[in-house]
Length: 87
Image 1: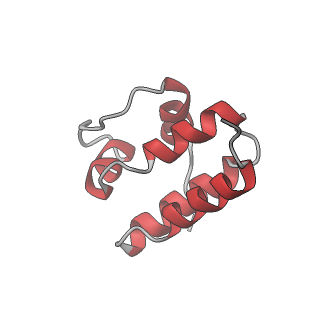
Image 2 (image 1 turned 45 degrees about the vertical axis):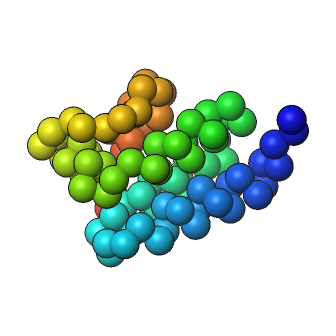
């Protein structure tokens, strides 16, 4: 099955921007916007799955409070942990 990459990118950007909390909207949209055009196709699906994690879990993981993520793609995790958010 051929993946429509542009449609997938739009879904990912939308999901990253409309999370439910303003802080996570900003953090995740900034993160996704920075990397979406540089991530290879196979990792885009992984990025989409990454965004299925709960906002609270992502926030705590990003801020080194605790790790309850149900996600195991080390590449995406490393990108997220290394990402420096500037408001």
